[in-house]
Length: 372
Ligand SMILES: *Cc1c(COP(=O)(O)O)cnc(C)c1O
Image (cartoon, rainbow, N blue to C red):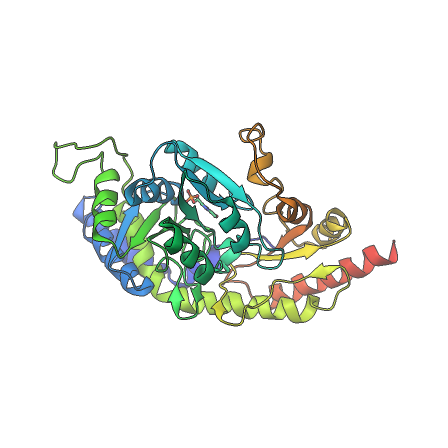
């Protein structure tokens, strides 16, 4: 079975580097924050093109701490997408604010700026655009709306490390960006990890305070924070992997282009576009399967030895925890949830595996259309 994601080829390729870096950390006997973390934060800030990067222990915490550090308060309304991983909404609720879900564009699957504008009320203080599947959200329009209404923008970059809108990387366009190093993300560690990027020294200082129990000076706790530090071993791994990110993202784009060539003309399938001015980094390769044929296609592909997944089968506003909340129409979101299908996407995929995925999808599409 070809998996959706396989970290083993990347680990094998850089095994000696990992072993040496990890051994270096073991020799220091010091595991929380430390020089590996500082080195990584500096390298990541340079890479993204921001002044500050603050390592934390997950992408979820990067959102929570990023929201609080940027000044979002309990009772505030925060406009975001319902077509995302649960953590985006969860983080907003966990700080006592209210997510206001607005609809997405059917092609980019990202927030529709016109819908964002309409959803602004006197309680709105922030927008959390999600760069879903590695495709940058419409940041020019979103930051213009935010500026005109004095709103904070926190980018959810969990799936978009290395993606760019025009020349600016995701995580450098809003007031802050939240990243995840969950193993299957574009820059994945060997466990949980995350980071916040920002140009704003006040946001950076507050994030440093919040990640460490609300204290910058030891035993001087100024606010209620979190135990959410990036650990030295994860940072050591990320220090090995960051220099390979560009080439890994290039490999993802090559795989996506091959899929698009193969699947682009299949009837009833819409492949993810390569946007003209933006750099899509394909955290996932997700197509749309129209006319209620997704389940049949997925089953046929699985029978041919290729894994598939549905990200995400239930939009946030339809989950049990949000079901009783009021929201505007989310027609596109609800339709996408019935259509999306992701196929294997990882930089270590061999050309043979790539061919096998293509063949499985083409044969399956043929088989189900013959059965219609
Ligand atoms: C993975 C992900 C998160 C959460 O990151 P964790 O590191 O798993 O906590 C948040 N938002 C999106 C869009 C994600 O894909």
